[in-house]
Image 1 (cartoon, helix red, strand yellow):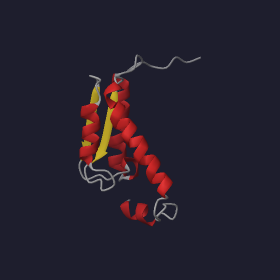
Image 2 (tube, rainbow, N blue to C red):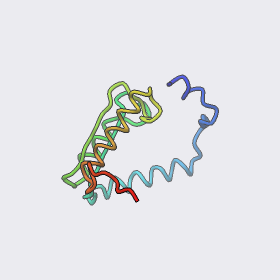
Image 3 (cartoon, one colour):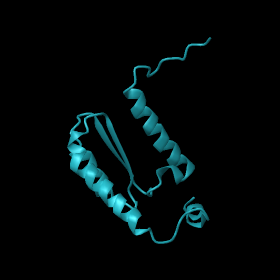
Image 4 (cartoon, rainbow, N blue to C red):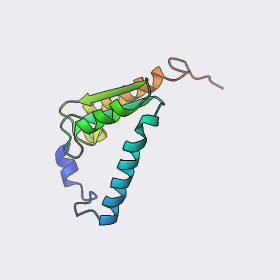
Length: 115
């Protein structure tokens, strides 16, 4: 899977334009400044072998959010794009997301009505 990702011709491999870098920095700083206001349920997922974003940054996001209903999941051996990993790993990520959502929805475990 990782070989496929590396050989994907649609992945941009050039340098990012300065404006893009500036905007990413501004958004990151804004999120960091206002993260204490996040009180909604909060799910943070991160690959343990991510070399794009250090897992400690996601852990900090998790810790700084002021809500009490928050979850941090680290996936050892997985990279930045959790949904572009091996099929079993992708299944685990989606299963964790769906379980997290089900635990917070009113319709968890319900059967859809047929018409």
